[in-house]
Length: 206
Picture 1 (cartoon, rainbow, N blue to C red):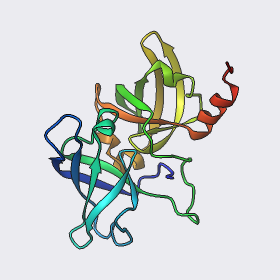
Picture 2: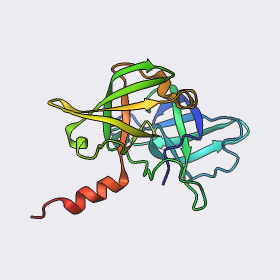
Picture 3: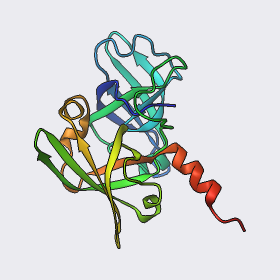
């Protein structure tokens, strides 16, 4: 489990195929901030741009670790198939503060940035999600975008999907990769865990 509070900015520095066929995944080498891996062991979970991955090897002094990502995960996520910056969050400990909201690290779908521009001291980010995710989005509800726990400010249902708006304060821009987004960027979305269970309980049976 995670909280959507980013604990470090990393960078994918190397991507190697795990086989020649399309069904094979890739091995990613990721650089982490200094000291970030001091309490990490092989097999630990780290969310990378919101996707829960398993540490397969690491070099703490060098600040680098590797993960293996399947072809299925690559097809259902964005930003994990090439070199570039990524948001990092280590798995939640039982005694940690729950600063964001309950996050599983399982990407529910991809969104497309429709608008990203400054408003006063902050930034407005509008993302178009698939219609199948629209029923989970609500005013003042929670959404995870590239692993970052955010609050929904507005929801608009459109023929092409569901557009939601969020406000990014300067701290979020400075301490996550969201500041690098632009119109047309693909982002990983995870809907609120509680909303998922409520939808299941209220869904008609049979």
